Length: 160
Image 1 (tube, rainbow, N blue to C red):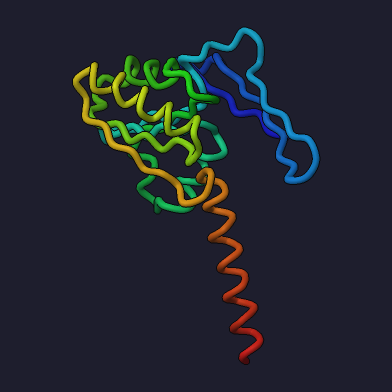
Image 2 (image 1 turned 120 degrees about the horizontal axis):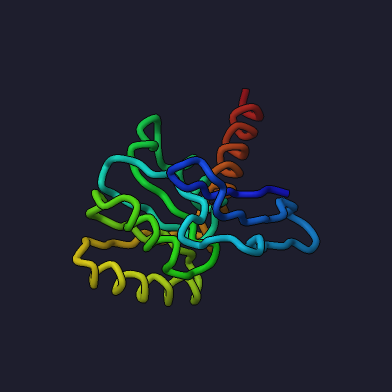
């Protein structure tokens, strides 16, 4: 199991999201009672760009797959669902953000939320764009890339 914690500027834990990490059997996800959604799992950067994800594991998977050593200059937030509260909290705490990249799931709920959140961002006068994973979510994309790499290594070992 994993717990993803969101902190305020003073280092106080304000939000916690629990998630099972098993790939078989029943899984669970829950936000700890009393959590402040404005402080969902996040990383405040300095670039003026905010990347928004449905789940903490998708945020971390995206960073692992697509960013190199400069990943930390951008801001990131996991909605822990599809509520706008965590995104709006980041925009309030990081007024230098000018551009929002919505990276929600490639399913009906994710795409509906992308359209809704894009309008929220536009209403604030900010630039908005969207990026959709190939599979259902960014974690599945990362797992598929890892699987492909493993198959290529096995193929090369077979040839040698």
